[in-house]
Amino acid sequence: MRQMARRGFVAGAAGVVAGAVSGVAAAGDAFAGPSRGTGASLAAPSGGPGPTEDAGRGRVARRELRGMWVATVANLDWPSAPGLTAAAQQAELIAYLDEAVDRRLNTVILQVRPTADALWPSPYEPWAQYLTGVQGKDPGWDPLGTAVREAHRRGLELHAWFNPYRVANHTDPTRLAPGHPARVHPDWVLPYGGKLYYNPGIPEVRRFVQDAMLDAVRRYDIDAVHWDDYFYPYPVAGQVFDDDATYEKYGAGFPDKAAWRRDNTDRLVKETAERIKQIKKNVQFGVSPFGVWRNAATDPLGSDTKAGVQTYDDLYADTRGWVRKGWIDYICPQIYWNIGFAAADYAKLLPWWAETVRGTGVDLFVGEALYKAGDPAQPAAWQDPAELSRHVTFAAGYDQARGHVYFSGKSVVNDPIGAMDRVVADHYRNRARPPR
Image (cartoon, rainbow, N blue to C red; front, side):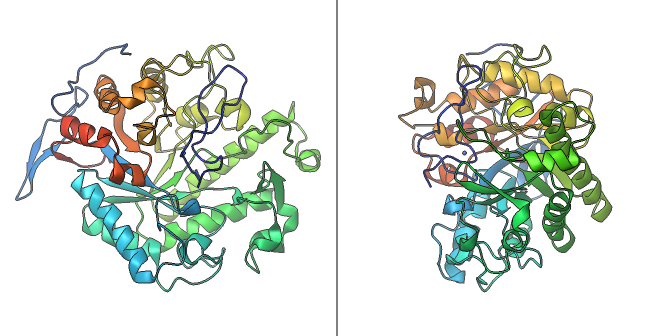
C-alpha cells in the first residue's frame, strides 16, 4: 500500500502537515541526556534486575517489551495478498511468530480490526477483506484465535491491535459488505480525505466501537488491547471533517468544538479502559500515538519540537492526559525520527515521554521506525545500520523506558541494511520477559 495512512507523517515546520513517508503503508506507518547503556552488550536501564537463569532455556534479560507490529490493512505485512488459502495464510502468520522468537522479541502486536471489520468471527462486524479479498467472506479459519494460541505456545505475548473509527480507505458505502454497520447506520459515517470514518461525536458510535473491540477481549486470551494513532483523522489540507450537526446536538457546555472533540476521545479511552478491566483485569490497555503531544511553542508542557502534527490539537487526543490520569497501562509513542533530527529529535522526545510517565505507573514503550532504515528517501542517519541500535542504547539511560516496538513485521523480516540484526546483536543477546 502506498497511500497516506497510519504511519505516513513526518515532522515538519510548525503548523504544516508533512508528506507521506515513501514506501510506508498503513493502517497505519545525536545524543543528549544521561546514558547508562552500551552498544556492545544488553542495554538495560539501571535499577532493574540483571540476567537470570531460566532452567533449560539459557539466560534471560531483565523484563522489557520487545515487540513488532504486524499490519493487516491493505495486506501491508500479512497476509501477503488477499485470497490465499487458509493453509497459506496460517503458514505466513506462523512465520512471523517464529521470526519474533528468532529475533528474541517477546511480543507481537497483530492488527485485528483494520477497517471496521474483523479477523475473528465477530457478531458485530464483517470479516476483513484483506483475508479473502471480499469483505464479509469467511476465510475458513480463525486468525485471531490461532494467533493467540500459537503466540502463547512460543512464549510470546499477543496484543490485539484495533483501529477504533476508520471504516474504509475509500468513500463509497456501497462497497462495504451488505449488513455492514456503516450501511445500516449511514448517519454514523463521515467521508474525509478519501476515507470513511465513524463519527466520534455520536454516543451510539462510541458504544458500538467499544462493543465490537471488547468482543475479542471476552472471547480470546489476548494479552492487551492496543490502539494506534488514529482518533479524529489526521488533517487534510482544504478539507473539513463535517461534524457541525453533531456538535450542535451534543456540544452544549463546551467552549469550542476542539474541546468537545477532545472530550469525545477522552470518553472513548476512559470507558474502554474501565470496560476492559471489568471483563478481564489482567488484559492491558495500550495506545501508540503520534510521537508529539504538543510542541513547547504551543504549550510550555510540550516537547522541544517543531512537529507539523500535534495529537492534542490535530487529532483531539490528549495522550499526555491519559498517562497522567492513569487511564492506560502503557503508552508506545511513535518516535519515528532519528537522533539529531531538527524538527523532532529522538534524543529530546524520549526524555520528554520518560518524564511524562514518571510516577504514573504507566509503562513507556518506544515505537521505532525500522521501516526507514535503508530507505533512500530518508535522511542520512537512516542509511546507517547502527541508528536504531543507538536509539536502544540512548533509551537505556531512562528507567521509565521499558522496551521498544518495531514497525513493521515485513521490515523485521527483510531488514534491508541489517538495522534489526544490529539491534539484536547489540541489545537482545538474551531472551527477556515483557513487563507485568
